[in-house]
Image 1 (cartoon, each protein chain N blue to C red):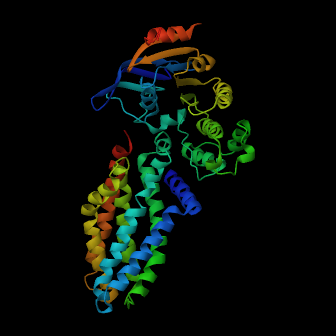
Image 2 (image 1 turned 120 degrees about the vertical axis):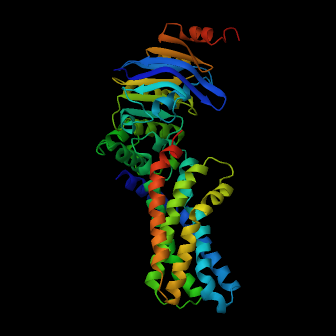
Length: 229
Length: 217
């Protein structure tokens, strides 16, 4: 069984075709970067995989299940995006506790996770007082507290400074071991850091899918047609 | 059980920030006071049930619709959508949260309203039960329909337009039941109460069955 499978997926928003016949197959344990310029359709793919959107045409399956129909398959995913899904008026601990209950996860792991992400000293502080970097670290903790086999990272470094970005990528690399990873980004270097395969998306179409080559940036620029610009 | 967790989380946030609760209490107090000074005491008994409901409608529109709106404002609604929780459980959680707010408002406002209008309520227990049952129906309708308008820029205008036709039977029946409880003439009170209960149950079942479509994509 594949971890993620998209067959002839079309997604329209009104008359606008955000995705046009996407076929993508991700095996268990693979880490795949969805690379593409802004508006290419990366986040739409992530939303389809996470069950937030239904495809207009085609089929999306995660571990053999249709994510927008089957709520239980969502237990097998952890999602980190630029939106942290954290409640500003709850403490770090309370946020994780709430999500633990939604995912039926073991609450005893919360302290361990907070320590791993360097937030133990701030566990009783309201999230509204956290920096962007701290919120993103807590967001990763939220995404992995139920130990999902599939980790989806949707431009998690957006809004972070260079240091914050480096630190976050370090954590992602650590927690992503032995997991299937889908990582959307428009930053080639970030893709190279943690992924072994790349899917280049442009204008809603999958135009390249394969192992990450040595000179990914050149490949990327060539296939999205930006070379020389 | 997950519905309870959603309600608990919302209550924790609400009691910490008191944003919605304070707004609702303040608004209910101001409107009650304005009504009491503008209505002659001789008409108080006849007009009080309708005015009491006007207060609850204003306050409800203001407060109950915020249960989902806050999730949109804090960008956490998608966090619920990607979680392994049935949409109906999210709705039930929001209804439970709103019901608790409603009971708090009712416990505070009802005695003040009775005092301001100098009402001599013949059957206060029936009055409280009638208002509560009416409010339960109102909360179910507002909670379930508010998801439809949260992404609209004109939600403040759209929500009353959507809600009033639906809650009209509840409002009229509750006003009738409250009037009877004030006068003490309980003959025929069963019909409006049965209508409120029946209507609320139907709305709740319909909302749970259809909420998934409003909640997703």
